[in-house]
Length: 156
Image 1 (cartoon, rainbow, N blue to C red):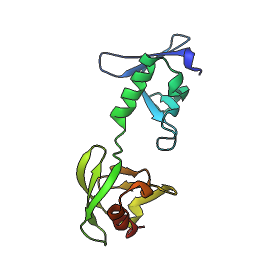
Image 2 (cartoon, rainbow, N blue to C red):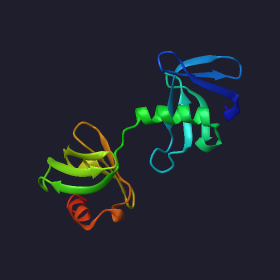
Image 3 (cartoon, one colour):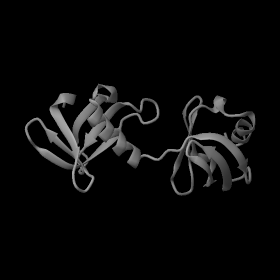
């Protein structure tokens, strides 16, 4: 469905409501990024609660500000991927180990269960999962300080 062929609003319960050009209302719509790390503002699917694609937004920038704000607000409430800016310390080089890190959302600690919880997404991009399933992003290993890179190298 093309961008102009739907309206988007929130209902009294803060759920997204999509109305198609034929007047069909879909309550509880979920916005899903096709490429959340590599191209976060491209390829947004608006899905029904049953998982059916109702509308596709090729690029967020083509939407008028009101619709774009609704989608971005919804995505922000669903997605929580802190970006690691520095690794301050690691309790042990054997797993499980407790990592103390500085993220774009503040300082935190998490437990890395095993080395398999560090996934390489691209040459310099990593996704690290803690024991609770929270995903931490290392956008560019080379951009980390020397101490952080040295600690991280022990696990790669």
